[in-house]
Amino acid sequence: MIETMVITGGAGFIGANFVRHALEHTSYRLLIIDKLTYAGNLASIEDVLKDERVQFIRADIADREAMQAAFREHHPVSIINFAAESHVDRSIDDPGPFIQTNIVGTYVLLETARKYLINLSAERAAGFRFLHVSTDEVYGTLGPEGLFSEITPYAPNSPYAASKASADHLVRAYFETYRLPAIITNCSNNYGPYQFPEKLIPLMLLNALEGKPLPIYGDGGNIRDWLYVEDHCAGILLALQKGKPGEKYNIGGGNERTNLQIVDRLCDEVEKILPAAENSALQQLGRNSYHELKTFVPDRPGHDRRYAIDATKIREELGWRPVFDFESGLAKTVAWYTANHSWCRTVMANRYHGERLGLGK
Ligand SMILES: NC(=O)c1ccc[n+]([C@@H]2O[C@H](COP(=O)([O-])OP(=O)(O)OC[C@H]3O[C@@H](n4cnc5c(N)ncnc54)[C@H](O)[C@@H]3O)[C@@H](O)[C@H]2O)c1
Image (cartoon, rainbow, N blue to C red; front, side, top):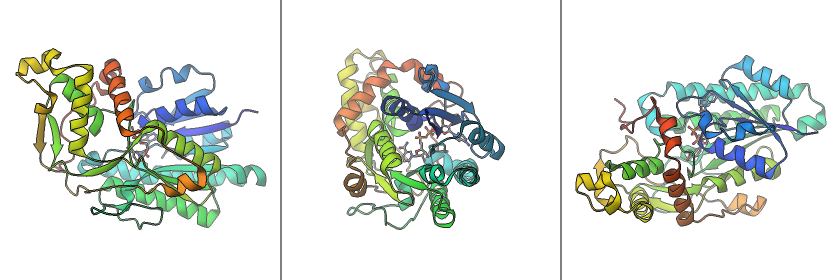
């Protein structure tokens, strides 16, 4: 019998990559549940939807009846919760949707799973997994030294991080109180194909290709630990299959870079694919290098200075290893965006035009 895995947020960046990963590496039937907000688009899973193992439901994870109906009808053996409002800048401008989806939505999924398990056999209930995908931002900010481990206390600084931290606490509580077999993964900044072009790497990449300014927040010295999305997907699947209920696992690429280093590296990668001298958008501006497009802009309020993950636990206990180093992952990402301009146009149409977000006005 082919078992069903529910994937919420499967039309978003990491979800769309995960669905492909799961089709290749497992035999599950996949039920994608996605509200299709501005950040989710069927264009990201067009090919996937043709696969007979995939079904799609457009629904809000905070819609209790819709979630219960999906569980009743599809009898899943697991659920992976990717669905979220995910952009820190937007959470500064309007925290409401973050509270609703990230906290209330996760609560509704937990309740749905809890009630669903009551009617399952003990064996099937014990085999069920609720995997909640979270972020390293729940831990707050680091100084120049140290790494976030699974026992680092939570200290979220943005409304986004606080909403994810709240959801993590609920997931933990459902394990402790109801023994819901739940696992949490906290990962660092992902990059790769299908990321909505409001996030640093695709935004800078598209702006560079179009000869637009490359806006760098503050002094550009904020550090993130970059993880290629395919490595993240492999870690999630491993945590689902081998992880222990009640545990959390940090997933990080071990690639610390300042935002300025990222933008400089991107400029170099774009130069390899389309030299500035051959890009008419730059030539019209009289620019001879992508680096000349860099523009320093006011910082994000409450901008965490440094995140870095200690991934020892998932490495040692589950055998996870990232396959992509930052240079190869970034080269793949630049090649993908350059070849998929029509996807960028489709997902951005009437939704986002590269404007500055997150000044809290
Ligand atoms: N992208 C990263 O670097 C990163 C890092 C750490 C953790 N995460 C976490 O990973 C998960 C996926 O992130 P992402 O970058 O793919 O996000 P994304 O914004 O690209 O995609 C989110 C998806 O969730 C869907 N969605 C939003 N609200 C919904 C709702 N109420 N009901 C159903 N679907 C809804 C959207 O339509 C979209 O398809 C999130 O939980 C995020 O917090 C992301």
